[in-house]
Image (cartoon, rainbow, N blue to C red):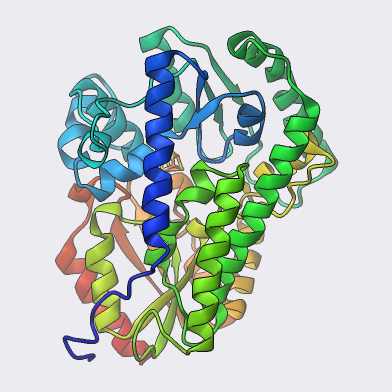
Length: 412
Ligand code: SF4
């Protein structure tokens, strides 16, 4: 075991910049709603943010707010309000905690950013079902509430190889949205602006990928817990120069750590992969537990989900369609297993932690024998932690701790 002094979470200096960027992001949205300009679009986290940004919208991501509700543990108090109006405790707890918070007139933004009283009211809401159908239901609720248009893309599911047929189908849906978006924004789509936004988004994605790949170094300069925090600009600011500048700063810091052999987990002896959603309300507890076990969670499917290597400014609609269909969550089990195999090799992983997230079956991959198949094929052992992204009633601290400690002991 590490001693008490060594068991401190190593702080990333770039966090200060990130906090400022996130504050700017929310204040800009708040100001836009108060002044009525620019228009605000809500977008699902792997929706066509580039298109919205290029059309002059400020973009708000309700899942980011869902994660804040989870991380502040406010979700536990707000979920029942959504259950009371018919949204089951078994469905996405981002959705239930977010709608519940709205009904209770609460938001963690109020505590974090002085002067912000509420989430930004949208002019239009845009979803992509590449993640799950819940996002459609979620945005539809707000659309009815505020009588605002809800537009969306119906994505393929269980995709093996992404073909031109898939790409044409999704690109066509993106293009079909444009007239409705032009009506709301009051401006015509400028294709050059879209090309430039997609180019910026690709650059952001490439830098984020590089940040995540620093964890292939032994010892790793970054943990999964760091990446859940530092992915925020890749989610909410992709398509902007601001996000690019941020990841350049973060990457430089991590490269300096590598040069100086500075480990995110002092005395790193084991390297694990996290598969599934984060448990937002327990990020710090879990980070401390793994730190004390001198075990680094080096990589995750979750943080990798904002790596879009297909984006290409020269072919904006089709490349967005490909990027958002190549997403892990959209793919077939054989494809996912191949992907995980690559991750295990790239990051020299000793074991996998599967999170069986009660209310997010879409991002839970251990219910149909995948863990066992991977163990058989790669000889990589795994555990499955029962829990949830936001609903802590589905998670037992004691049980998870016992399981993790036993797993680490067995691997060691
Ligand atoms: S992927 Fe899971 S957590 Fe995300 S919106 Fe869908 S159900 Fe909720």
